[in-house]
Image 1 (cartoon, helix red, strand yellow):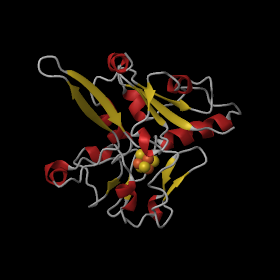
Image 2 (image 1 turned 45 degrees about the vertical axis):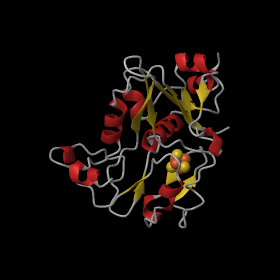
Image 3 (image 1 turned 135 degrees about the vertical axis):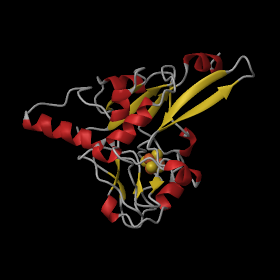
Image 4 (image 1 turned 90 degrees about the vertical axis):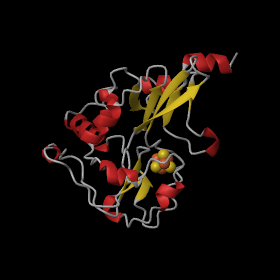
Length: 235
Ligand code: SF4
């Protein structure tokens, strides 16, 4: 059986530090938008950290939720793309072929998680940030859609290395940049088809839930609810 990549995010562990956001920008060559473009809604963040509040001051509870492409199994962004630039690959990744994209932005309109971004201009990097490009990730130009790929460059590198060494991939031997950078260990990545993998076992937790479950998109990102909130809801 092939791989089916997925992620579990534990909201009890996330402290909202946004290390994952910084790591994603560096790994995936995502330019900083600057005040002017950000003010026009043109900032790009393949992962963002949402904050939810409950209660009244001073008894306020805060919950952080990192939101990235949910890698939906029934992805609304795919059938609306007239050039098949957005498609599901054989490892369950919602992939994006940049040089097929003609910039209709239909996928961004269809995605209920607002995790797709359009390049309204050719991105620029202030010096010396232009010296730290990741050579494994394409630069996206004006007119192209982009989004989280689960760091597909890392997935492919690990798969190629394992194949060359004639061995199976080991659970946890590589991670997307966000998972690697999280100081709280809130994010776990791996193969959902492997019943013994950590991500597989955690995804079956009774705290597990998917984002906007009612839409039937069947995401491959599972959130573990905060224990206290979960217990209150199930009291
Ligand atoms: S989260 Fe959005 S972009 Fe990602 S697969 Fe689902 S619909 Fe597509």
